[in-house]
Amino acid sequence: MRHWLLTLDGTTRFLLWSPLLLLVSVLALTGLHIFVAQARTWVWKVLLGIAVVMIAGQAVLGLYWVPPEHYMGDVYRIIYMHVPQVWMSLIGMTINFGCCVLFLFRKSWVTDSLAEASASVGVYFGAVGITLGAVWAKPTWGAYWTWDPRLTTAAIMLVIYTGYLALRRFVEDPDKRATWSAVLGIVAYVDIPVLWFSVKWWRSIHQEQSSPKTVDSLMTMVLRWSATMFLSLFVVFVYHRYLAAQAARAREVAAPELLPPSSSAPAVSS
Amino acid sequence: MNDAIGHVQGGWDSIWLAYFLSWAGIAVFGLSLVPAGPRRLALRELIAGTMLVFAGVMVTSLSRVTGPPFVDGTVLTVVSIGSGLALLGHCAMQFAAGRRKEN
Image (cartoon, rainbow over all chains, first blue to last red; front, side, top):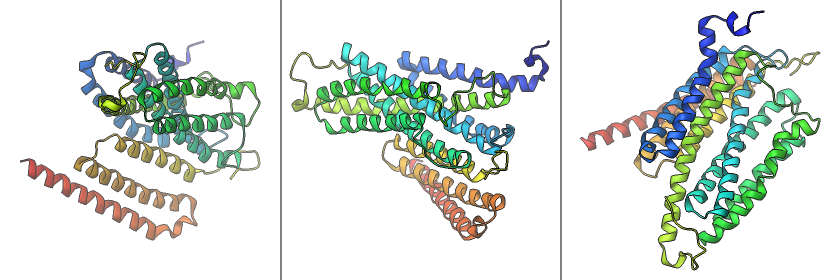
C-alpha cells in the first residue's frame, strides 16, 4: 500500500511540511537569539515578522481553508487558538521552573529575570488559553466551566503563578525576592505534570491529547502552523519582558540601600 | 445548539469571539512591551483603531450568520467602524507629523 503522503499532490505536501520547516526555523533563530549576543537585536525582529505573517496566514487557514470537524462542525476551529496558547503557557512555566532551580544552585540576576519574564508571559497565554477554552466549551459541553480535573488544575496553575508574580511585586529586597520566588516557582511546578496527565489519569469531560495519527493531516498542519506562530510571539514577548526585568534589577541593585548585605547575595552577571 | 445525534450546529459567534480575543490579547500584551512615549501612543491608536474596525466587521458578519439579536447591530457596526477609522486617521496624521518634524 502506498504511503498516504505519496498520494497527495505537490502543493498539499508542501503545505503540510511548511509548518515543520517554519518551526525548525523559529527554533534555530531562537537558539541564535539566546546564545549569540550580537544577533539579539535583529533576530527578535525577524521572529516578530514571521509571527505577523503567520497570524495573517493562520486566519485564512484556520477560519476558511481547513474543513469542518465531523461532530463539532466549525466551532472546533477554536482549537487553533486555544491549544497552542495553552502549550505556550506550559512552556513558560517549564522555563520558569528551570530558572528557579538554576537560581538556587547558581545565583544570578539573569536566571531570576528570565524566571520572571517566562512566568508573566506564561500567565498571559494561560489566561487567554483558558478563556478560549470556556468560549469553546459553551457550544460543545453546554457550559462555560465545569470542575473537571483538567480545568481545575489549569485554574490552580493560573492562581499559583499569579501569586508568584504578586510575591515578586510585594517583596522589595531583590535578594529575598529572588530566593523566595525561586522556591515558590519550584513548588508551583508540581501542578504542571498533574495538569498535563489529568486527562489520562481521570476520565473526565475534557478529551485526551490527540495524536497526529488520529487527526486529519490538514488539521495537524494548521495546528503546527498556529503553534509556530505563537512560539515566535512567545520568544519575542519573553525577550522583551526579560530586558525590562533586567533593567529593573540593575536599577535596584545600583541603589546603595538595596545592595545585598552578605557575600551570599546573588552576583550580577550578564 | 446541537442536533439529535450531537453534531454541533453553527458556533461562528464563539469562533469569532475566540479569534478576536486572541488577536486583541496579542496586540495589548505586545503594546505593553513598547517603552512609553509618542511611538507607544501612536501604536496604541493603531491597534485600537484596527480592533474597532474588526469588531464592526465581526458584528456585521455575525448579523448575517446568526440573525437576531445581531441584526439590530447596525448602529453598533457603524459606530465601531466609524470610530476605528477615525482613530486610524488620527494615528496616520500623528505619524506624518512626526515624520515632518524629523525632516
